[in-house]
Length: 288
Image (tube, rainbow, N blue to C red; front, side):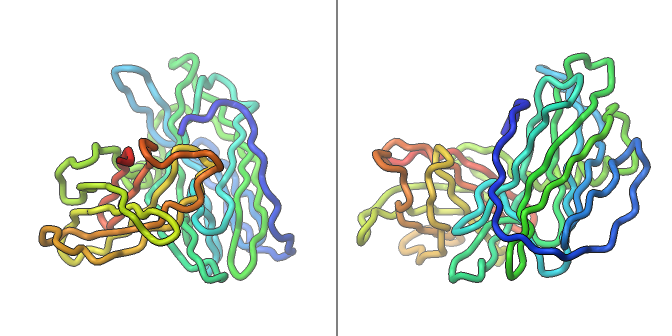
């Protein structure tokens, strides 16, 4: 997701007044100071520069640490929750910033459903295209994120860091988080983890979407589905009987519920994210 320098609103959920112990600040060239909230803290960390055929990029990360038993959300939060928001206004020598999302996990939301996100800690990698690649970039972000346990607290952080592209003490943490970002692969592409097929079938009140996944034997696999726009509120896919599928194929299913008024399922392109302990992939899958 490429973010230009425009703010997004953050929804206040529940207000509470608790504190976590302040965490020590890292060296200035490697990380910003921790900004603490009740049960959480956030900071910016610097990564190394990368080069591609199209652009030179700087790498950084938004690191969020949460107290035991607390979580925050993925870009699509599931049955309940609020995704993080980012405002990069005030940054200098930055043309654009892309926020990447490491593979998430599902967890009970305490209300009978499930949410999608991160427990304990997460680094959200940032890829920065500078206006002038020969100069450092001054990164400024206003972060909004939910801090949730038995209740949710709105978290905010105002973070700044100069990113030069030189590999420092935090570069390994940024690189490790980047490796957990799902790889974009085509539908049907073969691999140890692969989404083989997607189709609709008749169901009760709503049609269902059936997704077949190939994965290593005995590996835990989960699947998340997003619609073509944020207004789609699809339910979380659940494991289903594989029927006559080939050995080793896992099947997931979910109802085509939560579509915006007037939206058509046929031809809509879903984003499917399959996650296993050692791999994660994203597939753009048009519905038949």
